[in-house]
Length: 463
Image 1: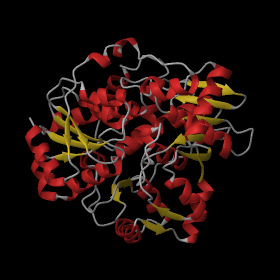
Image 2 (image 1 turned 180 degrees about the horizontal axis):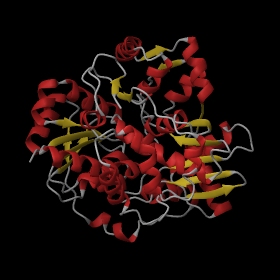
Image 3 (image 1 turned 90 degrees about the vertical axis):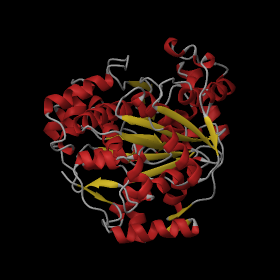
């Protein structure tokens, strides 16, 4: 299995190299040269298996000879040992043919744990075998950073530096990043937006001298391994609801487009996914793109769903690569136009193809708050704002009524207690293991939106 860049100018890599490299040296994102296909009988055989075994069977064709079968199974087992729910990603029914898949049962109460815990174990195994140490630098809108810190804290092969937008994440999200005591993890509060943080990380990767000096690696959703690990729970949910003999749709709260692109990969592998619904908040660039065919950044608005406060959705480039017929030059031209003008128009054929595979809907603050209140009143469930946006989009954009609709429940409500309490009158409590989070001392540096300054901080913090 080989991986190629969406911009066509970087060398093809195997899974191990693509995982450790993250962003390609031509600025593109790695994608598999070919997507393996699972026959209906293979998908049907997943029914009743443990989450760990499904993960092994779905991911195994993508990893080549990076791990032996026994080693990979051990890595998967270690990754999910900290998830208290035996199903790992359970389904909860909220209507006659509507479901929420709870992805918040990991150590930081967000869907990012499902992939990040696995990637932490894979990195540790590979780097230990190679006798190497890397510096992971990531940008987060709230959840990726804490999940990365939790996955890599204390590991002897990795230093972790996470950039997040100062004052633009929830208090729980911030404290999850700033209270770990291990010396190999560091939180930097950037005076800017998430898009600024993401641009800084990409600039560091494109500074090849710095990249090589500190051994830069990435574990946010630009890393293909993250997307691959997230594809697994689409299989577990769909098979539980009757796949491959039944089509299933998914509504996905969407910021950086990685989670929903994982669903697209599952569909390309043969999973009978009917509709993938892009659920957005007021930062609705992807919803507008489906409506108009123009991808245009209009600046980030702070909302009650901060993990979705993104305008430049990095993983959309992976889908563009497909829509443009895997023409790296066309993708590069579109990305250059976006950088220069803040927009680009998709060709008519690409727009039609995009609309065939995806639907979208937008939810504003009032609509999201009303949904949280209604869901609590009708079902007793307390939803976080991101999951609530997914349910709103599911209601608005679903196709045929007989097709099950699964909304991805991306975070625990306790990560956003103020917004949830304002919506439904219930202040969700943190789990017992995190009950003292507000009392733990914080360790954070506020830094300007300046590449040279941040690179200097990364050099200083390496162990």
